[in-house]
Image (cartoon, rainbow, N blue to C red):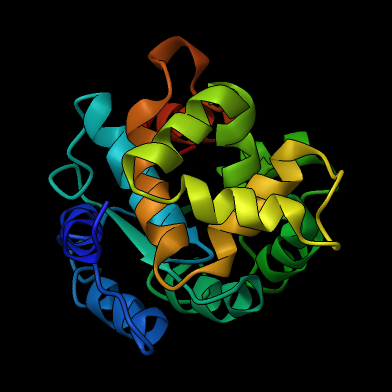
Length: 225
């Protein structure tokens, strides 16, 4: 696949989303312009999580923005406490929900406690507050749901399979679990994590949807407690 075609595929996948060196701050700024009339704000760590969640919502025929739900990429888990204070019970009083990686679960718990959203001692209690945890991260959830063979087909469709094979031969990654190799590959290229967030979200079978995504969307259908 030639470079022009690969760039066109990337452009199509990222249509509607910011990307580039300042993407993280720009994505947060864009989402913040939509929160004034929001009934619910969903905190996610980054743009790839936003893309995946909004893509999956569309597959469930959900228009989150029309429902008053704004997905806010906060630029990392440690920003949660600040935004939860701003929009939660100590601030605007908006209903909050969210998604995080397993490694950031404790950060989310502390942030929600500090912002007086609620004290969650367990993952189940965190879910009761509307916050769901991916194991290990959302890419890992998708790889297990879709299967490595299908993920490799996605790599091939984007002209990336050769690059992935090269990563697999590198000393640091040779012999590692294929799921670990794929997660590394998603995060190792410019815009790659963002592009594959949409591809993975579009490719997973509906009856195999990762639990954190389906659980979060189910929570967002229920009225606040």
